[in-house]
Image (cartoon, rainbow, N blue to C red; front, side, top):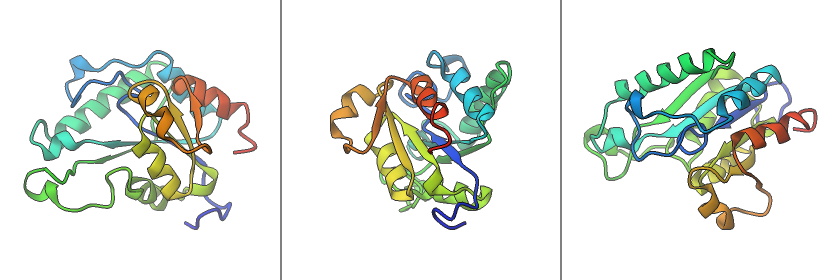
Length: 193
């Protein structure tokens, strides 16, 4: 995988909490999960447009002892099943269970916690993704910074924490109301991405 080599696949990296699902602090319980309206359709449109869909999510609740990695993976399986009902799919899930204030092995310094680009770089290696032809969509400045650090185009959504973060992002970052609006802007110009 070489940045911008034109050989790899185009991907859309998507943050989870506040972008795909309604922001709920330390979400891990299936019964608390709720899609942001339009999110399943947005993911299906990305699939149909030929983008690889990779969810990249910080899950510091693991490091803090609020829930386990199995809880995270169980929720992701649930989301996969719900998306399948609408003809949508996530091609890869990447999550960071670390946090500096975490417990045990989860408190170690890592390269994966956004705003660092480790999850995006790891996915690019595993799935032969051309980062320069890819996009990062999220609701936080940390999402935007991870995308920029990886060499991707960035989009901030106003859902989740996005409305409060909008004033902090660089002028080169596109801002859309939600994931569906962001994807519609991409699909309309997919040959230019």
